[in-house]
Length: 382
Image (cartoon, rainbow, N blue to C red):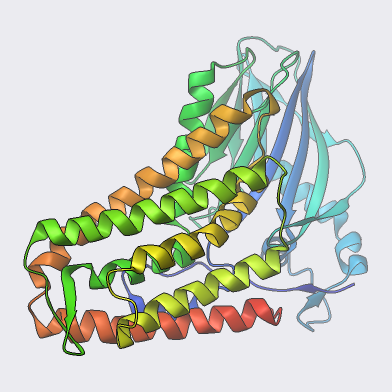
């Protein structure tokens, strides 16, 4: 059994040409997943860590053939546990809660590849009020890495989401269940974060917005006469995209529809290509909202895969879904608010009409076409 070896941090979005180095799974950065469950005298831990990340840190691929086998991973199980115990620490009431193995190493599939699954347990002699957790996995080599946590206090029916990042590496686990408002807030934050790191979703939206400050006349782009006209066009596109992806995100999360991840990700990449090439030909001008709606239905399934990896509290499913959707919309509006005024001011310049619209759209189309090839033909990013 072979697993692709890959490692890398996505470059800045504003450097459009650098986007060619983004991985095919452009909206899936380096994450690990922790399921923490409170017990009377400690914390039970399930920790899913991507094999590609572990390979980068521990060089698991001993024969250097670019693939990992179960044998190579299993031989280093002790090193994996040692790394995990060094990078995750618990304490309560000022006393350390030693972390130790609680089960054999396993493997599991996530939407972006195969993960090692570690079963651990933190033993606390003094357990009251809260447990302080310090997470340090991969921050020294990848500051964008995050630890996504589902924390269930003892006796609680629904987990609470938490996120460890480089600037929030130490957090407290409250031993009492949190309120519904806290769950809503946490998923709003997750929605904002995932639209901002979802490079394929962002490029699709930006490709649709670029012509909003222009009008098509005599087979050429001309400046739009007013900011109001541009804002109305933007509103149509964003509303159509929002409505569409909200529908399919909800249907997928609730279990009514399920599509293969490879198909979804391939179509998402293709949607970026179509939107970008349309800017070169102007085939669809003021009906871009239709394109936003049609492809937005597919993008919703992409958001659903992210939300599934985060984990959903069954006792607060509606709050989590509403919060995540709201966060995505806030993130989109922030992008629009930054884009529209600048684009409107530059709309009459050759820099915008040639450099940004034409050359920028061509670059976006080429990047997305490469994503499509990688995803459709299941090519491992290098």
